Length: 209
Image (cartoon, rainbow, N blue to C red; front, side, top):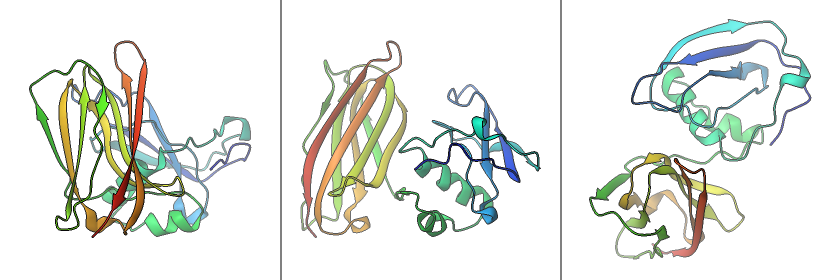
């Protein structure tokens, strides 16, 4: 979904609080007023801190400054808009044509102390008698982890992990009630913090309830 090449005005500008625990928030986060049906900019990661300040501006932003919206960055952004505004925005963004994925509640993430030798995403199996789905993966180094469930059409159905994690073996558990029966794909993508190298792996999974 792209809105580059358009002039936007009447938007909000937010600055996030940066702490030692949040190393991914380094500059401004912009978005327009949802009532205007316009959209401006998303950050790659905005961390987990509340926004430090917000103010409104009516100064038009030239079309050459309005970037395209990269795939996959909208999900977390809408989650925070809802959390801090108290407004239900998911359906509104879907009506505007943005591919918004749900961020499931009740995700349980556990880590072992063992350091694996290589990246690996284990195959995920759904037990029709167990409403909990477990995804296991291994990280030999610290990196930015994107773990998600994709439906048969290639759309993101659930975002499970979108954060920096240390080396280790991980188990992520989530409730299968959040997805309909069918064929899905579990996708793991990791960016090595030290080298910038990328690892990706994907497995097919059949969800039965």
